[in-house]
Amino acid sequence: MDTKPLTYKDRPLRIVFAADARNVHTHKWVRYFLDRGCEIKVISFREWEIPGAEVYVHSIPPTGIASIPPFRQIYTASDYSHVRSILKWADIVNVQFIYRFRFNMVYKGLPRLVVSTWGSDILGVFGQEETKEEAHWKKYILDQATELVALSKFLAGAMRKYLSKERKIHIIPFSVDMEKFDPAKYPRKPANEEVFRIGFVKGLKKIYGPDVLIEATRVLRDRGYNIRTILAGDGEDLEELRTLARERGVHHLVDFLGYVPNDEVPSFLASLDVSCMPSRSESLGVAALESQAMEIPVVASRTGGIPEAVLDGLTGILVTPGDPVALADGIASLLDNPAKRQEMGKAGRRFVRERFDFQINAGKLAELFEGLLKTN
Image (cartoon, rainbow, N blue to C red):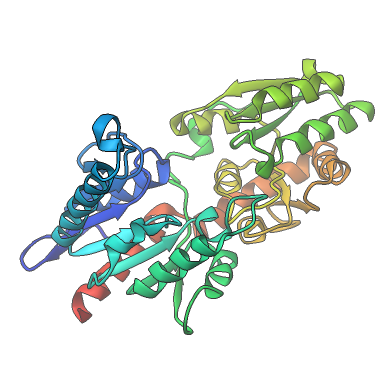
């Protein structure tokens, strides 16, 4: 692991991340580059504190007199001007999630602009048709970028339809802190516990398929399995999912834990027999990677970037998205075979360490930044 300080013109390298300040991945990138001696500023659309970095919240809806035209236009122009001054301070600007509106104009003409796509910023909002305006701004910022980054090959393919010409797209995935997600540091489920624990760590939204897991719970119950399904996460579909569990007669088998902070996720995963990711769409699947790092086998949908994150038959099982019977079959095949669960768990940690170790992939982003400093 390279830990040497990153400098430019005999001073600390200055980086601006345009990213959600509340997102755990933003915090991980910022922490890595702070540890490399960089000066960091974050431009975010949501307010949140990041230790060691200055956070500016942009595009806050104006209130009072500022919300009335033409004062609203003056307010917006002032906001954009302030963002632009922050961008000009930086040696490197890394957009970590692109917005689909005119705010992207602030990035015009920057000498070292790295645009990283995360998922819905390119794939669009699940279930909604893309507008012409959204497509326009995607194309605009990708054309402005000096370098392009995607977190999966699948996402890189989705990006290419917005490019005006063929360009290289670097694959630098979201990754796992292998020291934090270390199964040796957490108590496992007691060997004599007869209840099989099936876990889910995602937002409670249709796109991530928690409803499919509840339906699969009913299938497994009807087959006689002694199970407990635990959903760690919050979201807009919570009450609808509670209702579904009651309607299917499995409400006593399904626990809704609510939001679980990332620092507590390893402990939760360590308590499981199987982890599930029944997503209908997914750019990669960090939850699956974290599960595998904890030596917990994964049953996930064969969709989007998930096949890059889960090796079917080796570290987990891939099934048809939206099919609760297929999901139940995959889970059952692991519940019936403890040796297989253990073998897949060991293979999963090796796989994540080789390809998705955060320190290694953060180093790749640092190398990309250093390359830009040498050529621009």
